[in-house]
Image (cartoon, rainbow, N blue to C red; front, top):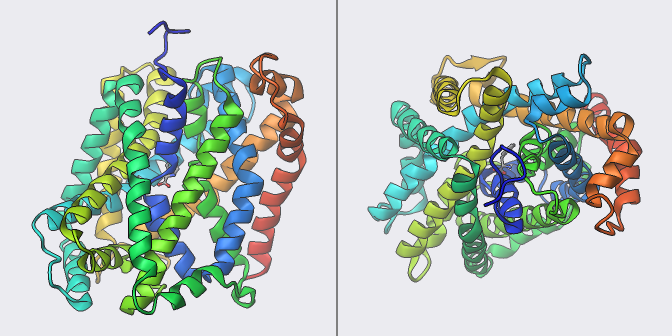
Length: 450
Ligand code: PHE
């Protein structure tokens, strides 16, 4: 492929959409979204979530892509180029740190997907009732080191793909497998809503009750949006820097936002009707997804095969997300610290294995790994998703709206006037005024309304 610059790049138009969607779609949609929704008020959470996606999804995502493609740099380098000797590169540093923090706890759950592939292949769910399946899940993460081992294997896999480079690594994975995941979710959804007692779960998901919404729920909804769309920490700046000058950034942001949201809502439709039908509480947290899914497959013809396919796809969906987390860190280390890609990958993975082990072990029953009442796992998740990502997103839109400026933004989204980009004025207005205001308001309401 003819390269526009010396850096690695995505090969085709579908490349960037597939890679960005691969980053966005992952455990955040299928594991974290149902957990957050179950713990934060069901349908009311869903509505807030959709509102925030609609309002912030495209503007924030587009801001990141624009900065990346304009500077052809990693998250830190981009701000250094555009605003040298200022506070702004801090946004990039925070993103790199956030990438490591997320990778540390994300890889815990990613490791579970590998354990569950083995369980599925060995037919270990067969004929078991809910109590037995729950027991299996508890035994597994109480095992501690087994969890850490799977996690380390997953981190190693991620490192392997990232080391091979963008073009060969990321693109190939995302293109075929993500649509397949969508198909299997639809099949599962149909099975779930036709289970006895599914109605109650559908009501939980779609009939909002706003009386229970406080600041905590609103902040969680915003955190989930940023987490699910991979926004606020430079994934999209980094990926934007690999995009061709002829690609349409607005369409990219739109497709990624839409497909990610579709998968999240579908996951809700899969999990809640079934969970209610089996008597699993929506607030069950960690076990919600990992216990509900095998139970559904137990009630399905061909469940054995579907179950294997599902967990394999889930692992791959997680992998395309961890690849993006690691890519942010590795791009920074190679380009800013001038350490070669292989060494950079090894350093970042080693740090993650270490931090990740603390996250995994903190989930055991009598763990001492608790800080201020929260496990290391929850603490990492809360700080990175609910605080750092939205603050990163806030700074990015403020940067684009007030420092980068309209002229360069318009030039970038319209490919120097080659595209019409009819929404550019509206999106820019949101970026400059409304998005920053909205993010600040959510934080303030979260602090006041506790
Ligand atoms: N968006 C990914 C998911 O939903 C997680 C992620 C967050 C990836 C932030 C990169 C950056 O699974």
